[in-house]
Amino acid sequence: MKYLLYMQIMSAQVLLSGAFEVAVSKTTLVGIHKQSIVLGCHFTVDSDLPLDHIIITWQRAKNRDVVHSYYYGKDQLSLQSEQYLGRTSLFPEEFKHGNASLMLTGMRAEDAGQYVCFVSNVLGSAKGTISLKFAAYYWDPQLLIKLQSSSSTFILESQGYPEPSVFWYCAEDKNVFLQPEISFDKSEDGLYSFQIILKVDNAKLNCNHVVEIQNSLVNQTVTRKFNLLLLQQDSQRQNPNKNVWIALSSCTILIFAAIIVMVLLICKRKHTQQQKIEEKRKCTLMRVIP
Image 1 (cartoon, rainbow, N blue to C red):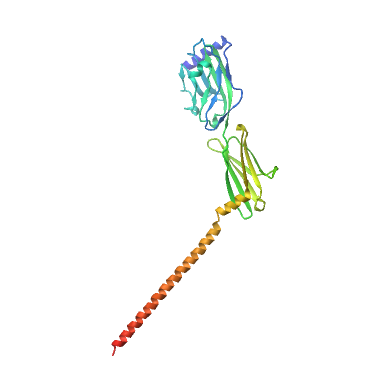
Image 2 (image 1 turned 135 degrees about the vertical axis):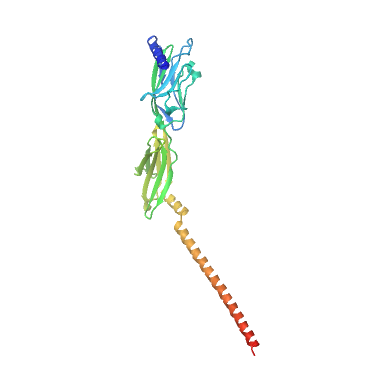
């Protein structure tokens, strides 16, 4: 109640002075995923007047959720939206210069939208609305290769925001664009995860491919160049499963055969020695019997 009464008193002073203004950027700001951003807001000041009664309130324009509030000479965050807990701050040392800007940390997808900066002091009251967009740089795409008997499938995966523009073409002819399959999915933190899938006949692999991923909101272009034929050959060298299995099988058979031969030789030797012992025993018995 005290806050609402104080706001009404200070708002009424706008009728007494038309000189008080609040200025914000007319250009839409872009906040980067997990980074900090300052929402600029400036108000009219008079060096001869104190700032003891200044009120600064930041709100979301759509639902009027409180982002940050300041009055009675300190932050008043009891009504702050849970979305912004521990993520906002002002610059009190800059109030004397008319700076009511808001620092927002850990930018998220749900932070995008319009924000209202309301300032009131002994000179009057005014407000300004600023627009904020969310963006995330696309990281270097991962390449997956699936080899089939007659064709190969190449898959590029990446993540960012917003949906990018994707171009896939042969470097030898930039005017001929290939048509890969592109699928998007929203991650838990609001980013776009996507797959670019291109299936190529193995007889047509010899081409220097170029893939461009463009995020126009942050002027980012990720370019990847590769030769599919060389990639396929590298994959076959790194994963020669069938050949290795054949080699291991052959070695196993040879070792097993050698073991059998050794066992037979040992058995034969033991059998020969047993025969000699038996013959000697018979000869000894014949000499003993009259």
